[in-house]
Image (cartoon, rainbow, N blue to C red):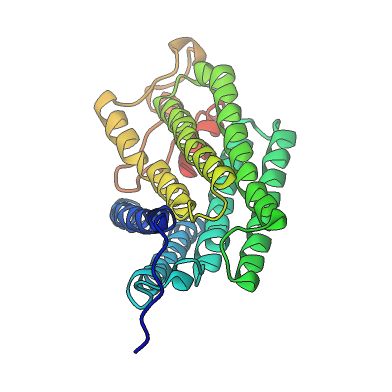
Length: 313
């Protein structure tokens, strides 16, 4: 058997990002699995479209995790000591940019719909801009992943580097716009509703998108500085966990609402002839048997925006 060629002295610069990225990817999948279980246990009566969103994202991330395991086996087991294996993307062209972009696009569309509802359709131009950035980002990821597979190397060459930067810059811009839009809505509307659920949802959305923005910027810098390294394997898991955190946050909202009791409108909003039973229609109630799905809303619809936001939380 012929001896393997000696490895270069800086081989750890190529192997470390792939190994650490794979390990963190599996760790975040464990967090996602727990969050998905928590969701299925507490929100079994959610609408079918929300369930399809959650379980669809979980399926994609399960597939991505399995493929990343095959990548690690190819690089560090069957290809142990072989530099050509270590330099090859193997299945990474599909499980990182393509699946990752599908997950990020789905989660960003979820937040766009939230902005659309919260702004009462007034921020349509901002929603359109976020969707445009997200779609351009996904196109860059799909194209870059395909070319990476064709060339058989990680991001090398000017075209592949530009496509990778398009993917990551688009994600970053979309996340910044989402956080900015939610911050604006918080200042302009949350104070008027004075609703704990709405405040919590908006605050968590801002915090979640700051987290995804931070990871996107870090990945962008890594690709810009080290284009031949696999530095983006955990990006999809960050977005999928953000989605589940946002949905499972309704558990805390429910507990807070239960401890504080129903929220009453000022007495002056009721005519003097209104009976006690009729007045209860102005109280926002949350049915604990149907988590955050059944709300009794003011007849004039002043709190419809809160109801819709909670139902898509």
